[in-house]
Image (cartoon, rainbow, N blue to C red; front, side, top):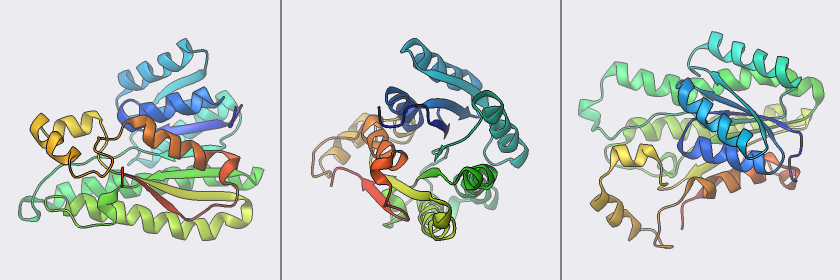
Length: 244
């Protein structure tokens, strides 16, 4: 097992990429803390891990609130005694023109997608520095690397994630902490179902060189690489997992 007995926090672990990541890391021996604003969905993920023989628990956390994040991290430390891996997956998205994007919406997207990552890193880094070991994986997006109509607000946050990843990697590297990002392409998640209909998804499939929509496990496999010691000499990188 590639991360046996490593303690991993996965934000937004209640569904989609987050749930897939929880299950994949648990398969490889990780002890999983499922953070999500939706406690019911987080509990379902934790229960699925437990039924498969893994160790997991759910915690209701709004990553945009420092008090929530600190309380969640403290609960992980109480239960597991350490934090080895942080996967910053929690995020929100919608398709909307810049003309219709309100200041409130802009702020909310940045609060969750960028500030949330900062708050989670800020909370776990003292513990990772002390143990001189840590793996941080931030979920970005191909939209953060290329302009997309109707997703200016979202793309700005994900570009911020990539920049944050590269900067933080240089700062915490001396403590044997790696910081990397995974940039998903079009992935079969509830978020995609909400944003696009079946005909749109079929059209998008034809634009992907591999001619299929990605699955959460495709992203989880990349997260696992960055979470394991297979990536011991890799930091500050963003791997785009997008079918080409």
